[in-house]
Image (spheres, rainbow, N blue to C red):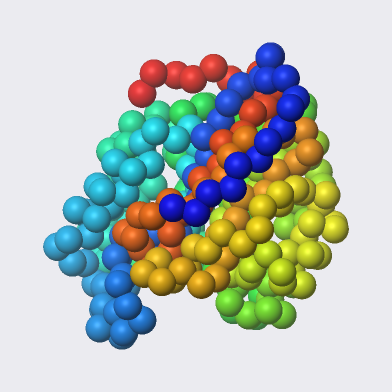
Length: 269
């Protein structure tokens, strides 16, 4: 487990602690080597027996977090056995609230999606399609707390193409600038030293107070593709990569504190 501890002296009185997680779960498909992309490619198109078992293992791992952003889900098609992955994981992990967005809809064959699971109720949802020559990337924004000045959780999964990522960063930056308090998380498909990340930080003033935390590939991490960035109003206390190789990515976790009035009290699961 790779960890960065953020030492902040600010008082946390009148603040609430949040445990955050971002995880690209690759449709519940575990990977142990590059050749699995070939030998297991059929699992991206067809149902297979062990998918639910692996999703249940993921549910057990995420259950103690407060807000979880998940990429590479299916929202109910042949390949998932018509199971909505966000709903399934929320139910198994005890999250009373879940929100999803289908980014690429192939009907009964596949419904590529992303989702947010939360112990807190949302006060608003926005869904956006991201620009790009190849459609199918999106942003899901979940509001918490004060409707007039909410905490905005922005979940994204950016493209493999650098040109498309730059277009998407421009679009996402405009979304982020509409809020005072933002947590942006997801698979950005680029590292901390990339031009795209530099552009995002400059345009949004979000904070990324950590060096490379390697998340990909899960069996031999070499690249930092998965990120959690926050506004300056949000205090970061800890950030780490978790050694749970249940996908081709590793999850990234962060503990933060926010002013108490940004959140609605938790409801029992």
